[in-house]
Figure: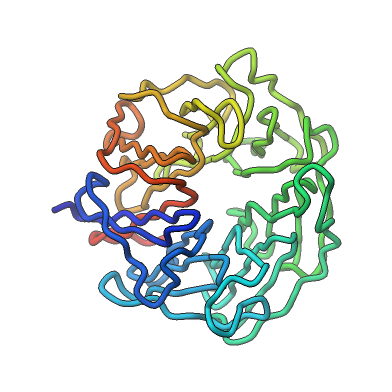
Length: 334
C-alpha cells in the first residue's frame, strides 16, 4: 500500500480510485452518477482529505477518502443528479480563502460561491459562449495568482485568457500576440520578471509583462507535436514545469515535456511506452513533490517517483481520462 491514493476522472465512467500507485483502480462513484463525465478534480486546500469533482451532473464533494460523494447544489445542477446541458470543466478552491469556490463551465461562464457552495452567482465576465469550430466554448482553467490573492486568471477555449484583479468582480482579456485564443492551460513561473505560460491548440505562449503581450514559442521546432494541453508545476519548485502535448485532440500520440528553468528550455521525458493520445492531465501533491502522474486522454497513465527523471506506465487503462488528483496520508501546508 502506498501512502497516497490517486483519483481519476473519466468521460462517461465517473471517478476511479487507486491505492497502489495507479496499478489497479476501482470505481469510486457512490453518490455520483456512475456514467458521469468528470473533467475537474480538485483537492480542498485546507481539508486535505476532501476532494471536489466537477461533472456534467453538477458539483460534488467527497468529504473523506472512505466516504460517498455529496451533491453541492448550484444554479446549473440538475435536481436529480442527471446531466442536463451544463458541464463543469474547471474548479478553483481559493488557497487563501477556502470558502471561495469558482466553477468554470461549458457553455462558457464562471460561477462563484463565497460560502463553501451554499449559494452561487454567475460572474460578469463577457465570454463568448459559442464559436463555429467547437460549437460551445468552455472555461478550461481557473488559477489564483500566487503573488496576489485577489487576482484570478481564467483560460477559455476558445476566447483567450482573462484576468480579474478583484476576485471576479471585473475582468480584462489579455491575449495580445497569442498564437491562438484556444486556451487549454495556464501557469505562472516565478522570476524577475515572472513568466506566464499558456498552452493552446497550436503552440506554447509566454508573456514576460504580466499578460499584456505574448510570444508564441514555435514549439513545432522543439517538440514532436505542436498541440499543447496540460501544464503542471512541481510542488516544491515552481520553475520546474511539465507540459503535456500530442498531435491532436484526442490524437494518436503524445509526450511529456519538462522544463527546469521556468519554461525557457524544454526536454522530452522518456516514457516507458509511447502514449496512445495527447497527454491531457497531470497530478502531484505538496507532501510528495517528486510524485508526478500524467494521463493521456485515451486512458494511459504514467507515474514518476523522482520528479520526472524516470516514468513507468501503470497497468490500468481507461476509456477516456480527463482529470487526476492525489490525496496523501502525509500532509504539508499549502
